[in-house]
Length: 323
Image: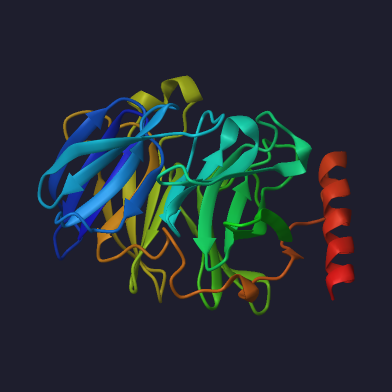
């Protein structure tokens, strides 16, 4: 199994053996890294991906057993404090955290779309995760303790940009990562150190896994889930904390192995995980359709911030008009 992992201190290329133990760990770059977008292999290299190291460019890596920097991609618009990224449809979906928006940017910068949540242009909702699926993209809003986290599903087309369609209120606060398949929705309730599985038919939480730390980072194969967790720490100290990966059976949700990434020194808080082999299903939805999702709430009736209440009412009106 091959993975790329970004932390607050490093970008790592990992190989796990058949028992899911660490067989090889290579540091590709040092410093704070976050989003990783997997690219199609059309240059002769076995794997290619983009990694976010700063808020000016994305670095392109190519290789098989070894990876080299081959190019860079500039951000086309005003972006900042970028979190998760994903590549599909000839472009990159970007969680543009500083601007409270989701961005789609063509890889050759032939198209640029941006949607600001709740009309805000600062880090109001802490937009942190994107999961493209068909002609839609699911975006996770952390909400910074004002309300439980939420997922907004937007339709997207290159000729018209983003249109918000659905909204899912989560039960937990301070969440990261969103992934769904034909029957389930998955997310990290980071603040509580939990990984959460929601049945999309009953719209109920059917399983939670608890880890000793802050859960962030999620990859998925046909049979496995890879979940990141790290020591709880204030943001300024996260480059020197310990990070781990949990390998989980996707069917039974049994934890099969814990991978310690702190070989010689603390590796920093885990931010992102992408599977290279087998293919990562949590990067872009290959076996899903956004039509599987409906607007619903897992939360108790916490009072919503007025901006969230107005936007929720607007979504309900749109749904009634379109029905």
